[in-house]
Image (cartoon, rainbow, N blue to C red; front, top):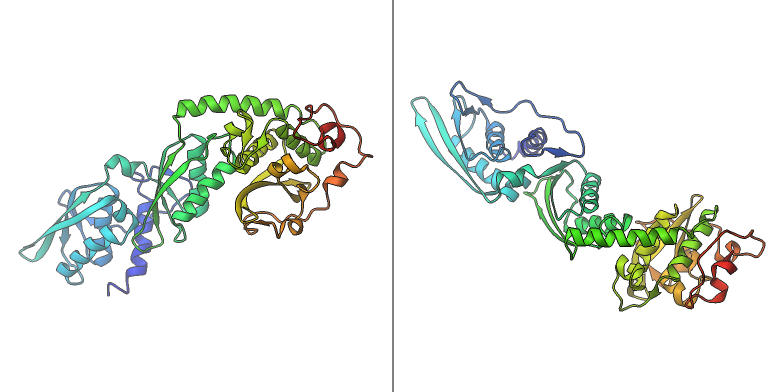
Amino acid sequence: MKKALTAALAALMALSLAGCASVFSKTYFSHSQYESLPRETSAAGTVEVDNYIELTLAINNLVTEHAESAVLHFGSYEGEIADDLAAACREVSTETALGAYAVDYISYDLDRIVAYYEAEVFVYYKRTAEELESIVSVNTAAGLYEAIRETLASMGERLVAMVGASDVDEGAVRGYVDEAYFSDPLACVERPEARVNVYTGGGFQRIVELELDYGASESALSSRRAVIENTVSRLAGYVSAEDAAFRALQCAVALANECSFSEDAPGTLWSALIEGRADSEGVATAFKAICDAGEVECLVVEGRFERAEHYWNIITVDGESYHCDISRAMSLGFANTFLVSDSQMWGSYWWDDQDYPECDGPLTYASLTAPERPPETETPPPAESVPPSESPEAAA
């Protein structure tokens, strides 16, 4: 009978957890509450249970409330009480996400009182009540990503979330951290190192424990962000064209005049924009930051170039997307590295094309910089590392 009730039990426990504000006080999506919870008897603090589902829910509610004990009353119970009580304690502590995360073990004393049974259940925890209160509840992987994005934006160091998505694992969580960072690199300045634990009891729910290390204190990061924001603002001041594609080129030239590419340099915004030397990750994130300030739609692409890890960007102009590899443009010029299509990239480059928009727009660098284009307004002076043909004056 217990096997036949497993699916229904998992669903009911998920609904009861979703309605428990004492544990999950922060939510990103709405939840419905399961109403048929175990009934309290007239004896204060005693819970009446009539079947296995109510028994398991009663024990599970102890955990969600971080209660240490409760008395269960078996007045008209359907089933073998001793066997079911042992199975329910084991199921809650090892086969639910919350139990796996919060419970050390569960014990009980079962007594017969004349015509009925009572059991006192004891829960021993490996997490504090405050730790359970800090858990956020989300329905989907998208909700988990949003929670991670907000944590990075506030430079938070810890997030614990219950997510109703069976496909969430450690790799997916690390991917969400990287995606959140690259979507707004100025938010936390440094790409954090993520330590991830995922707790599950075999059901569809997961508890994700995420710890983030930014390599510096919040005050130090805030100071760096202020300096970087000033530099980004200054460089964005050179971006004055009306045409979005040409604004993107102005962003690239401004960065090339500020930074040089080196494979053995750090990959941070600070190294690219303040120290003036960065690897492809630093260059790509810096270009993204300048494009954001210059109102150019831009993504950071994580992939490979000639079998080595490499980062570049995809910009979107008038609904069409294009590859831009600014780190390689710093040494080769923009002719073959700016406004590039997918077909031109394949062979030397690799990326997961399912994660990024298709790039097959009609624009090219040659057409963008054709002599008949009208001159644009002020742009930064060319750096020595940028060939004369790639200077803002020539590009205009």
